[in-house]
Length: 294
Image (tube, rainbow, N blue to C red; front, side, top):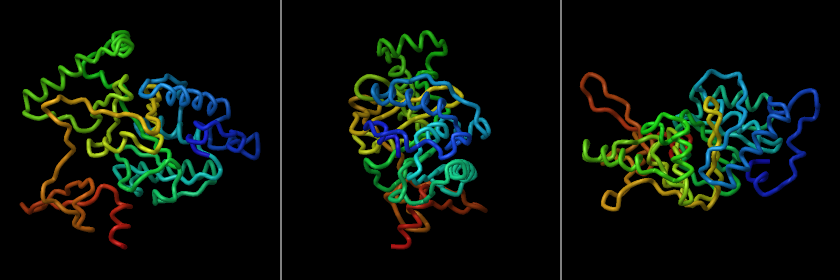
């Protein structure tokens, strides 16, 4: 049972472990209920940061404890989990988080999006199409999109309450004037449902259009900041930009993946050696592998 099932009002009994003395999915039931209540609040008010009682998790700080707590709170016995880091299923972060989820629940794991129901990620949205049976959980290091323009927590709360995002616009304008382009890449600010500006986490600008009017539910978790927020399916997501400065994703003109020859996916560059030019590969390793097997 994924968060989509909870969102649709399904019975939650099936996510309780067989032995009441051994919590299913590591967290005790009261903790999971508290996190689910915060998530339902976040789904009802898209983009709004909902505080929750973040727990200590058996992972290092900065390894995605917020996303991990969301996954453990919503996972059910029939779910299949996929965990990626920088688009790679075999990254150290991904392997250890996936192992923790699987060993504490006994559920299946997969590297294929089509087989998975919960996809937890830190830096990417998978290249494969995601539908309403998927729940995307994004790990968030800094959930506050206005942190770069204001530090006072009370002033930040006021700005969100009054939808006063003028200083964010000024910051983007200054970036454009100084550099000729808006240089902000990861965490690019977006207006959700015409109301709240959110930080889109470390995902690249390439992935932001995937959030707009998506079929899948996206949940954001910041463990250290003790905040969760959500973008429900079919929600308006607008990157902040100016009428005469259209939003653009990252471009690598003429570049192709050295493994699958794709020029239509998000590519990352490996630096060359001895003065040689670097090479490009797909960030999403599972998608790249599947493309080569076709």
